[in-house]
Every structure is written in structure tokens, then in C-alpha cells.
Length: 146
Image 1 (tube, one colour):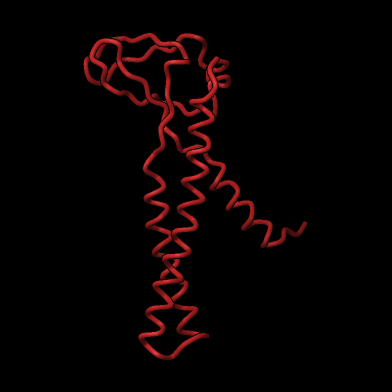
Image 2: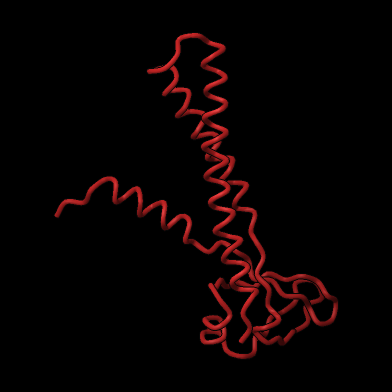
């Protein structure tokens, strides 16, 4: 069975943007410190089905046992979009330098301007798509209650 290369690239991009990287956070009832829960779910209904209607955790600040309902858990964006931006900036710069050097321009100043423009536009588009996907999943989680 043969698999087309274009399909694999599309699948990797789809998996990258469908991945839920948000953090589930809740605050302690005693000291009001923010704690990160050790699991990730796409919405509260799935979380309450798998975890239950009572979520208990030990506060990382005061070491007391806290008991919450799934409606008291909030989703927040992770800082992975900054990492994605940095990696895509590096890859976009390298790829655009190769493209400009190989095919487009032999003038150094024009080549540098084109490389900067191409790499910034590529990395910005990738980071915006990733951040929008993450914001959509965070707002979907925080919007609906069980």
C-alpha cells in the first residue's frame, strides 16, 4: 500500500493543530494558590465522565487536600506557542535562506531582506494558527459547564 507524501504532511499539520496543549488550573480553597492539574481534557463533560463529579488534589503551596467540582476548573493557554514561534522562525529563516540563495537573488542585501521577510511571515503564520487553535480550545472548555 502506498501513502502519498502530501497526505502525510497534511496529517502532521492537522495533528499539530488539533493537539490540546492547554493547562487545566484550579485554585486552592485555603491559600488561593493556583495549581496545575495533572490531566488534560478537551471539555468539562469528558473530564467529569473520566474523573468524576468530585476532583480532589493536594495543593502544592500549603499541602492541604482540596475538593472541587469540575465547574471550578479553568483552562489556560500554555506557553508552547512561543516555542512554536521560535522553532518556526529558525526553520523559516533556514529554508528561506536556502531558497533565496539557490533560486532567487545573488545580491546580498536583497537576499537578506527577502530572507527576513519570508522567515518572519512563515513563523508568524504558523504561530498565529497555533495560538488561535489553542485559544479556541481554551474558550470551548471554559464556556460550557457540567
